[in-house]
Length: 207
Image 1 (cartoon, rainbow, N blue to C red):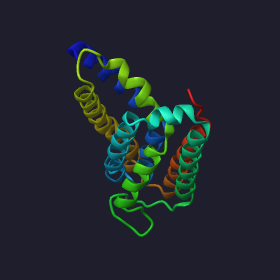
Image 2 (cartoon, rainbow, N blue to C red):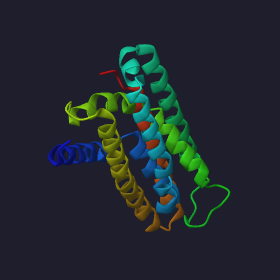
Image 3 (tube, helix red, strand yellow):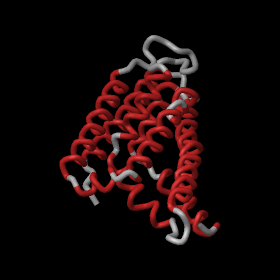
């Protein structure tokens, strides 16, 4: 793989990761609810989920999802329902004036990680995407496995700062507000984002 081809992949993948989607909305929802530090924990769920999606796509699940309407629909609706459930939870949660102090109302870091993994993995477009997208940046002259590993590592490396940027953006907004009524509105805004992401996932169609 040439340097030019790899750089083209970096630009294309970075753009796609940065485009708001279910995972990004989830990160912003946690940032608005609990601050940047809590939202940054999502990366520990997103990266393993993306890695597993890539592995499954290379093993053929991506092709199966593209071919099977039933399998695609099952994953799609599972992800959509889970996002809407998280959105309703956040919508109903009570605002905390100090997002840096853990309280009984806040979601634990492990729950955030687990939710991030589940939301990311249950998006069937992710697996299908890797099947359709990555081969465009691979050359037939070189062995496939090293190229897959390089592109996979590059993709995950890009996920980390972009995921963090969404967390910091939402968390910064959260930290600048100390009015409980406004925080309640932000909680609902974050919940609305998650519900919207769930509806977006439910509207996905096979390519």
